[in-house]
Image 1: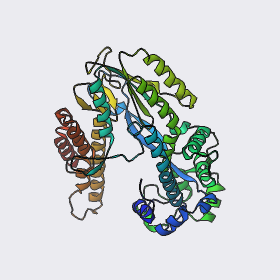
Image 2: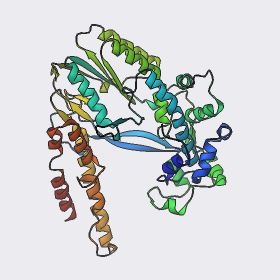
Image 3: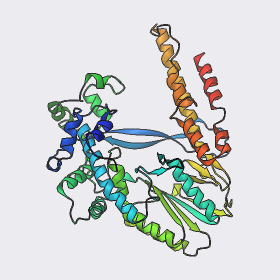
Image 4: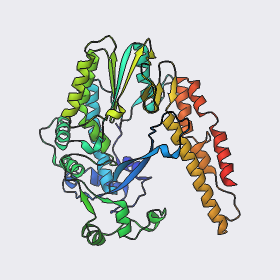
Length: 453
């Protein structure tokens, strides 16, 4: 567990320069305030600011087409709520407080390798150096288990609207159970209440009402907060911009505590599923709302176990997204191809962005397509911006600035999709994965030259 001292907040707030209803405070004040139980018991949480995060999702209906076009992309919208500066630090602190109890629960139930989202999991390599595990390592662990079992059935489930449907009573009960108390301490209850009865303001409406530019990158340099208390009362609250979650379910996505609370919500389910699968000599893994179950093909109790899983999910007031449900049968370590292959559901196991058919590792075609889509869009925007500068004679006779594009979309960058692909190839010792990204640099330079001219 990370040590909670003033340096914890100093490191956390170093790169958080967004504007909110409150000013940024110094780290010493934050540490003293957040760790004072009495202050949290009387703290008034500010509304979050919400915005829609659009994620391009490929959803092709015509699987016979060889080429992906812009018509195949569909926007997947998620409502993100980010808290004020002080509130965010309170949530971050309580996430660390709960982490100690949650990690103890995982260790006592032997679930440390099964629940992998929103946790920092480390290992020691052969040289004695500590390193953090990521999705690549988690996927490899699942694939290695399948390879070892050879004959097994893998079921993958996805929960619809996970964060939006977390039942408040179940969450509060599990929170109490985690702390081994009958009633939440008042400071914990205030934090719980702020994330279940949360209020929020839509960012676009707010900026319009305050006459601020949504696209400005310099606002945080000229303003220390979005508005003062008087303006908040007159233009935000009085004008009806505040929205409140009045249902008895759902927590906001975007707070530093939301991930931890989602794990706490699922802890009894995780305990039950892990126990059931161990009795069947199987395996259970969960990454947030994505669950994977591994059964022996020879076990006759598989159907009963699946029905129990469905029943337990319904008890938690959650629903499975059947459109994303996947069943893969491995025989002698190889996927059995009993159905025609489709674009969205290839006859390979999909897990954490990596595909596995028993012989080879592949990258998801959707991931590669998104990469090329973003690459072309970024080049078009950069070239269009440069041409506008040329027209207005504001380019200072300089050539188009390309470093950011090279860092984002080629092997030159250290933390981008290409470097991720190389890490996948190295971890799985897969030449096939490298082959999928081969020629990316030529694609980048060819498209750049085309748009520059």
